[in-house]
Image (cartoon, rainbow, N blue to C red; front, side):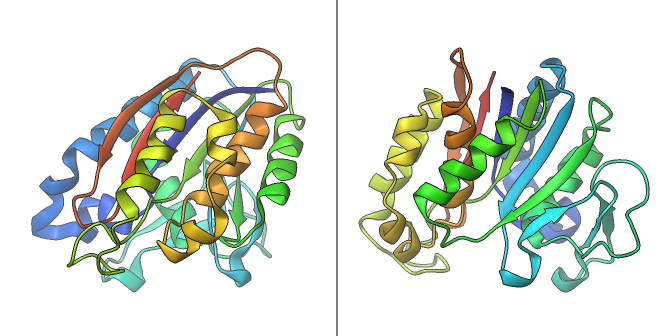
Length: 239
């Protein structure tokens, strides 16, 4: 059963060492993520799954202790997913789960065992919902740390340039996250999300599937909703 969820953005710029001199620009986002992680721990889960968008090579499950590196972003920093050592055959974490693992390290997470799940951004709504239901059924008290960004075309200088549909899409996602509205997340348009570069869509819909499979409602709080680099970054807490 899903007892809590934290939704966080996944840019490596969230890590101060990567952002360098511009690290202060993400201070509010980091603080919101810290609050969301604190609420996860307060829910006393017996299993935490970190979900994030991943390319084909990194999709699927990642065990506790799996490691991810930020060397590709110019920083010699390696983090592990929870405490302990990974099995010898564990694959490297994708970028989104590496940032999630960094958030857990920052929070000194010890509340529950951890595993990761790399999700393909094009995964269909139906498959996302099914996957979420399976996660919710995996333990008596399941918590999710859901990584992923909104649209990447909010301004002319954004990675995806400017698209006037982006604000409305991010607002729809923000409203659903604020209200812990699983139906609202499942209503997000897959094709439009792809066109607007919203990497979090599939992961948010996995969360929606987990919530839909859980008896009893969760309360939502939207902790952060900004687009500092022309990319929609949302932080929310469900409990």
